[in-house]
Image (cartoon, rainbow, N blue to C red):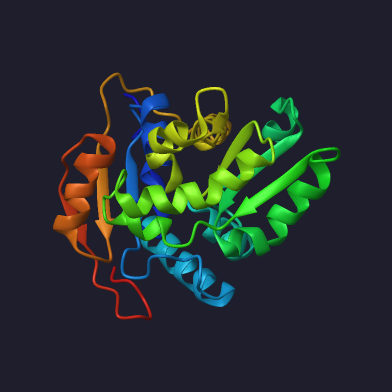
Length: 273
């Protein structure tokens, strides 16, 4: 008899982490997945490190109580603010976090000029600073925080007028500085890749980190003997601290799947068992 498959827990401030979940699902269709979107507190970008750490710790506990054994922090802001903290609090739990794909961008760039789109918290974090310091020698980095873009994506406005304005304001000055590569440093942003590509043109490469995160998830599952051997697609469960109907509508729009979403009422301190 085959062992019960181990669920992977995935969380984000909202729906952005669905880009990562989609990549994991594509690579590991037989692995059960639990997804928590903290829409009651989205966006995480402007929040304090202490707040994001507290939210991340509580969501991790919630996912572990529901059977997750490996946690994917599918949020760049939460990874920057809380990943080290989570590994200290839960030393027996493997974590996969988001790291801006600056290293592959610097390696691939022909002009040695790279644009990075991310939240303020990601840019201010030690993780981003460390990656830039280690891997971008000889490469000039242009940064933009794209204020308001996460909210537009959370609202399902992937090609709206305001979404386009925000992206053009970020990308056009970078193009004038001859970038040839754009790094997406927020898990929400892959959902607007078509619009980004339309703005920058077909010859600018856009790096989505989600496939690399999926591969790392598979490596850790294999390492721990948790990789599902089932032949049929596994169950996906979705939770939100926000409006479940709105989240369900976004699921259909963003990943093409209509699934029930359980609302989890958060009292501001702890999540229910």
